[in-house]
Length: 105
Image (cartoon, rainbow, N blue to C red):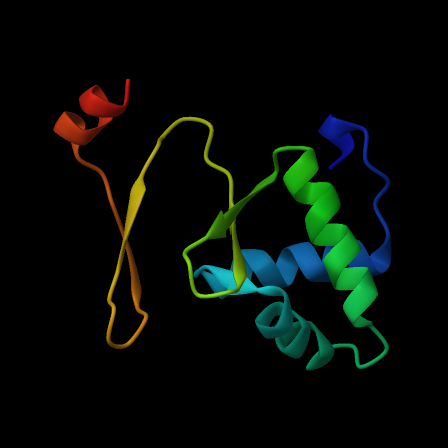
């Protein structure tokens, strides 16, 4: 955050630490539940604004997979990947495929 010129607060650090620990594509509601397990004082608006700020600064990526939820994951500037989503259970699987990358380029 400091590298991007963003102010670091206790609540923002908690949100980011929770996002790092999540290891999955999280929604605002899911992240809020996990954050509140540590600090019940953190509100929805704080998580929402923090994630929006992190997305706008390129620290996280927003994904809309067509189910009405925005999901977030940490950005990886060195690697690009795509997502497969199970239509039955909603499980998200990341994958890398050079031929798809070539087509996208």
